[in-house]
Length: 177
Image (cartoon, rainbow, N blue to C red; front, top):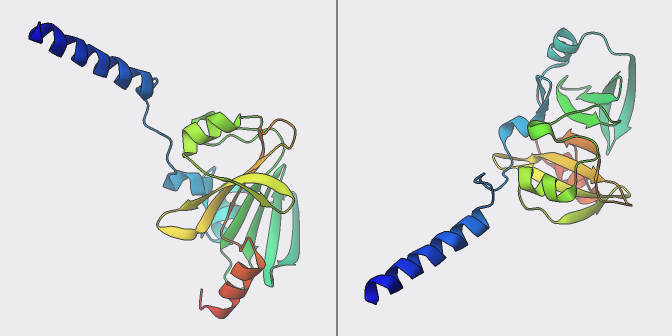
């Protein structure tokens, strides 16, 4: 009887483990590769951008949160560099053609996004509902996944080190970063 009880308990524990383990994949987690797109990373130089992606379709300048930026448009991708530092500070992926890690792309469901990148609370940012993931070793580097208001599917993605709020902009202006 005791042997049967141990065997049954072991089987129940194995069943519970398999039930919660899903398909055997580890829970989603943000990775360093999530802060780059097609071999361009935050912090790369403007020269590296041009060498890897060529000349942009359109080039402009703008000021966001008091930061003077050059923007380079490559189809549905807009990359911004800091005028003072010449480094990539923002990669904005719009349209329906971009692909991120594990085939995350336009239309991906919220549940799939959380499976790939891990748990995140929904936030409201610049008029959009989104998930914001920070890079653990560089907390100012963030992956922002904007969701469609109707179905909560992925609408666009942004990889940025620009401030997201007035408070962050003020803090950055006062720091030596």
